[in-house]
Image 1 (cartoon, rainbow, N blue to C red):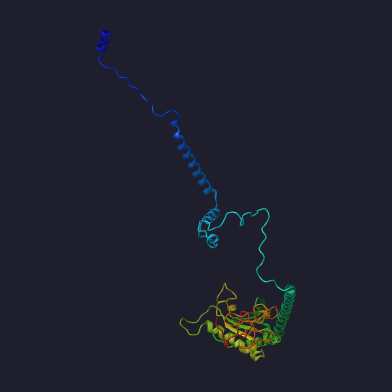
Image 2 (image 1 turned 60 degrees about the horizontal axis):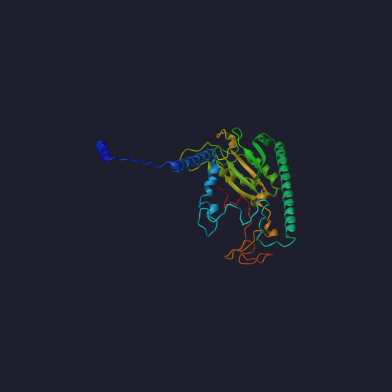
Length: 356
């Protein structure tokens, strides 16, 4: 005991033992790896998105945008109880077990079936009508060619007109046979700045009237001027001048026996349609045009009467079929006012002159 007390006194007091405990370690130290893996995955997805945006075209991007747009017509116009992004549409074809191997059969037409034999009759009537139209068109072209040859020959046979042969242009346009009297500074057709017709011009108009009078076509008379205008502020312009000259030519036609009822229109074009656009002041731009209008323009063949198309009654009782005013049409029981026959792109003028 004495020895122990001695040792205790020599040590200077109590002895303390410090124990260090290590925290972590083992399998609890890899949580950062999971977070890092999620971060790498997100970055990979982000770079893939950037790459897809770079290689996609504008059309593809627009299609993708419309696919997720609830206001797009393909989505919003579809009636559905769903109000989601796709508006009730599905990505797959319609039907729970739709097959993409075989093509879908289109639905049957909901219209009432036509009576048997009607299609054949309609096709036959239409084919016959087409043949008649083609025959009429061919006959009209032959008449135009004969009239052109006869007019050229008649001018060469008249000594007073032989010198004006170069001032006459005859061609066929989509409207019909066009006969143009071209002005010349050496041989003017009208007095300068007026509608007073020269004697040779009257003789030329009479020759034209004698050639075209036997033809059944209506005629359009049009006056043209160059760009030489009157003084600023003048009441009389190229519009009045071209219209007056066209009207004077119309009067000359009637004086030489051309039927007045076949005058379809008289128009003053001023300087809006030059024969020589490169030189607006060229004398050749001053001219009178006589156009024998094609019958398919002024007198189109009626098809509705035979096929029955375009005939019906509106809700207020106005019919589109023919018939007298307040009465029944002949051959039809549908009441309604008489439908005026179409006259093509031209209309009868109420007066002697029509301004555009």
